[in-house]
Image (cartoon, rainbow, N blue to C red):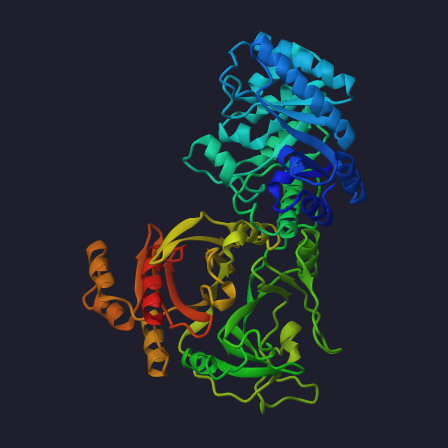
Length: 614
């Protein structure tokens, strides 16, 4: 089905919005009246600009407070409508949106509403225009799509149909199956928006908190399926009022919007892009730094060994168990401090994962590759993190290990991406770390919803509920995404506020590492010189009030800076290193079926990090 987007969903001038929609691959646009009024271009010039960009103008909107009003008021409305219909002919728009009235002059009289809408449709038909009547969720007398359809049906005019808006319908909890009883040719337009569930006045909810399909909690796909079953074959159009989108880059927002529609087509069973390829584990985490002197001692203290070096790039591989960290010193001057820049994901089908990403407009990044290097595609996430799709190989033999003439040691050798690394002499000194549990990626404040959609749609991860975390200087949002068995977990958090400069630091990112015995691992790390984040003693006094511990257990946690959480499934113990550059590490021990991230301890960690930075 064709795709469209309302200009109110994007920031910038009308011409900037048109260009952004075209670049993102939309077929058409809805032109919001305010955008037209504020444009220095004539309606003819706007129509020509859209046509040059390959865009149709699918809807002009809105006309308000038209129906069920006194005769003198309706006469003024017809005069206004006649002017707008002439304007639409100049613009090249064939359908106008008429919202159910919120006017104090409107009366609760369906027969009068039908009669006046019929007369409006007569005037529209003379101008070659169709009228799409939409029930606003806060309409004075008409607030449901069922009610709007009864009025349209009673008016019985070929130039009058309904506009279905997913937000107005789903925000009221209406049953979408009733849409299937509306003849498809009387559904003139379909406007789509998602939203998080919020206990707000519906008008404020609509005006400030809509988002693109797949970023909220509403069943937009179910509504689309119902409209298609009814016979609707017009555009799927996004109409999203969102304070963040109105400030963000129009081009980037348009790409995010187009991605959401591709996923919506898939969810509704309308198209079949390349299937999602769910990653099965972490191949590696990459940290870029101009100088390894700060981060290498910490890795050593955490039990990692430098096991190999890339054959053609200044990249070292550090390993412990199945946890692999790449240190990349080819950073340039723009990234002098250690920063988490890339994540390698184990994939059962790297080519399929890359094709999926490309179909969803995720930028596939160019990669400098020597002739002998393993093919390895990467895509950029909204925060700039690079995600590589990898088939993980086995560890290479250590330097000096005996091999036969074929290079066979009698044990598996490196394959895939690990085959690009030559083994380096090392003396393993593990402290009990077995693998990567999760990575926590800080998102720019205005890309949080985009990041959620990317990780769900492109990477095939399942998003969890969003949680709010108390920081000493504000309230932070966090949302995790994972595969089904928890072998890949990515925690997304908001970063710098709109008033902060992300280039000057923002919030650090971190890597969580699994151990089966956290107490022993922390003691070994401390003995090796690791600096752990100090936790206030007040935390442990509070912990004692909530849980009972074995004798000496709580004291051990306090001495080592270990935090504790418990749910109905299991227990979670974790602690943190101090931040190095833009990175810190978390050591975690999960027991039972605990599936969370210790969210109740996040305020303590954030406060301790702020205190240490002062």
